[in-house]
Length: 260
Image (cartoon, rainbow, N blue to C red; front, side):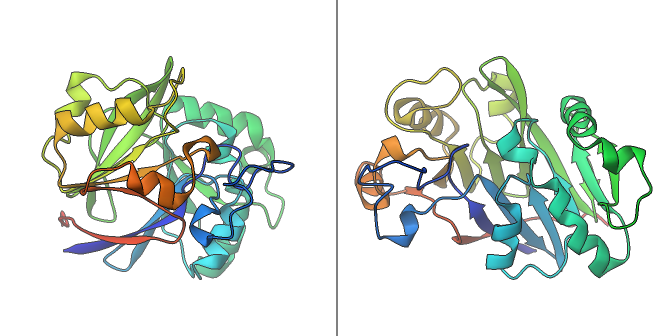
């Protein structure tokens, strides 16, 4: 069964362009250099699953004309990955129901702290959610198996996810062997790659390239890209033939299995 993944955003916590920045990337007229905060939408068997709801979530779903949302998966609790949660209200109204949120315990705690009105009030019009805690074990959403991939963003645990023959990993600096073994030989890998210089909590290009060489995916798309990396065209020239710089709105097809 085929699924479709759309890159809602491919930028860092600041996005591109950055306010008040006059660099060539932030001033680029190429639409591929306009990067909202990192998130993806997966469409599988008529169901829409979003990974992360950052501060650009409203703009992203409007751009992609998303009409319904069936679940949200969270990678970690940083604001550029959770701060658009309030905007799922429109999907509550459309479906006349709650939206399930799948998240590790750290994210659940952060959501309660950031959005107490969602969890402590019955006021009309607030987001209606069902929070489901996930651990480092596979789980099922709407018949689709999701495999968590624990990675580390400096010392912070982050969950990547494998769905069928596709894996999505953002905000990673360290990936243990137990997680690498979950994705070796996968068809499609989506991987964070900040820029070329070393960084305390993200892969740079050298580290991302070494990781790709180790796990040997058929094709890789880089995301969570900084303006320090260069323009889209400049980045692509630095990459081997099976590695691509993702951009906002890019759609890829992948294979998955429905577990009935």
